[in-house]
Image (tube, rainbow over all chains, first blue to last red; front, side, top):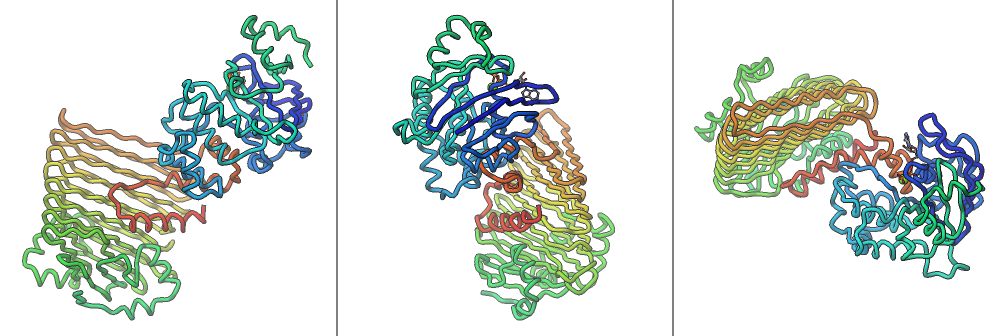
Length: 243
Length: 373
Ligand SMILES: Nc1ncnc2c1ncn2[C@@H]1O[C@H](COP(=O)(O)OP(=O)(O)OP(=O)(O)O)[C@@H](O)[C@H]1O
Ligand SMILES: [Mg+2]
């Protein structure tokens, strides 16, 4: 599904990601962990193609298409979608209008979708303006439910979400990733950034990676990585041989 | 239906292009969704008709003859010698324009339309009086436009609006001029106790110059005024706009809201609220979007003279944030689509209390302009 080779990314004139290699197969979900500021969100934004995240060398291939230099919306059309850690607040643009502009759904269908994540009251509010932490996450999940991407990048889906909503979000994300479909037939893949690993209570992940100082240091079983980080901190991963 | 003067034939003889231009300002030639209509081309009133009980629409000369008291409202809110434009108008022997009278307690939601069309003459002048007597409610949509063939000209208009006790007037003005036309509206409103005045102004098309600074004087307790303006300055256009509210009675309040876009022209957005009585509140909000190099100059002024007044303002001018565009692109919109969607949101000032037909008119004017962004 996604093949990243020898990727180097610069932000504001300094290299933030060094020599990233990552392969995510069809139907797989991967977890990305790492200390604050290590470059996790930067990697997601580089995959999505944001300006300001300059790829100086290396390549990103999605389902056989080299997307390294492709504009953002074309990547979205190919099936890449992202939940933002800090989405912008867009004053004046109602969430309902945003959803209508980005989909072919009618108002009724959008309202029904909004209800599934308790967001129906937010359709008439300015997008992300004054949304609480949990509301922002639900708004992001709603947008992804409308978009239905095949490759889902989630930047800290748990942060700021209360327990009740976490179970709702967990199930919705599992659905988006077609977790109910057998791996052989599953076509959707995911890359999920998490600090706590709570999302693993709702879905199985196939692989975990640890990013430190702009490099992916460890790969392995996600639960094992989570356990090591919980017990020994990221120092242990620094000792991992870089792959 | 009291058709004092109707010559729809004249309207039908307008060219297709001109009729389209007029439609964008809200003129409904067939009068669907309108309960009254006034139409003046240059200095000729070609239609005055009103089907609503208790509402009168009369050309100004006839109104001054019909009711003795109308003269008390004539050149009252706006002084004759205010500036050279009012002086020019005061000199006219043959004043044209519309008087709307909403009699006591009469409430009509369906809008009355007043259309002013500049076609052949160099200058069009008009003097309007909107008088809403105690407890009445009216919606007036004024559309002003010039013929597509009209290269140069000027429009000078005085509008005096009187909102009686507990009355409510919604005045929506949509302009659709041409690059060589200069426009000098001079208008003022007096609002009595518990009265509400809502003024909406939309100008999304090229014009040479618009110069106006409507004033509302809130003279009765609990009176409310709200001015909302949505404007686009295209290259070569100078929009010198403002609105002023004088909170001259206890517990009066005013809100002045502006959304301005420049695609190369100049917008000067003035605003002034003067709080001089106890329990008064006022807020000015101006947001400007610079799409192409041009000028947006916000000059909000708030002036309080006692502890019992609370006034604030908020102004922001800038371009569309890159991360907002990219956010929408990540959802699949192209850069152009994302930009248009954000602009659309920026201009989406929902004006509470506005009848749906008027909101649709404003939306249509925005849609029309949007294709040019
Ligand atoms: N636009 C930018 N301009 C300047 N520095 C940036 C920019 N974006 C990211 N950085 C820097 O790059 C580094 C990596 O940031 P990134 O957001 O990828 O971290 P992260 O791993 O997602 O951290 P967190 O767990 O706190 O979300 C940080 O030091 C950050 O300050
Ligand atoms: Mg991050």
